Image 1 (cartoon, rainbow, N blue to C red):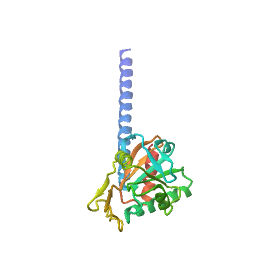
Image 2 (image 1 turned 60 degrees about the vertical axis):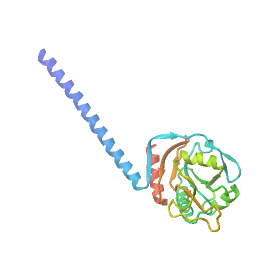
Image 3 (image 1 turned 90 degrees about the vertical axis):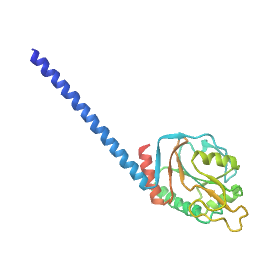
Length: 222
């Protein structure tokens, strides 16, 4: 009888040890897959936060002159890029890539996604921004606002903005005839989830294919 109890105890111990080993293997495989996925995202120029960052309310104006707050972003993913209409290089190049990405996404029947362009130039009126964005895609949302409100939103997405004595972001030059000189701003993009939280950042150079691959991976993780 004692031998039977001992044998039963041994089998229980073996089963528990086996379960623990399987759990450890599964955990290690998950870590390996997570690292591989993060490395892949890095190759596509994207970085995600361990947990989404909540955003404070914003107060901007769209190209139709309508108020724009976080509520306008809820329910869909949003890509946010800061720039200005007189930008001679990085802004139009990035918006062109975003246009290619957006059209390819629509043609493949994927869910809608917001592309937001926030102007850091006080001279950019809603009308100017609206006309400017038509050259890239009519669905893009152009935003403007007071310097304080724009900077408040930019800060939440870790975007630096302001005037500079020389170009400090990706080869920008001052607009021709511009009395203000250089306008400085970061050129990474922020990715905001349907709950209005910052999920991650996409660094330059921005390419349509890389944006698509990065978002596909991020959406799969969400």
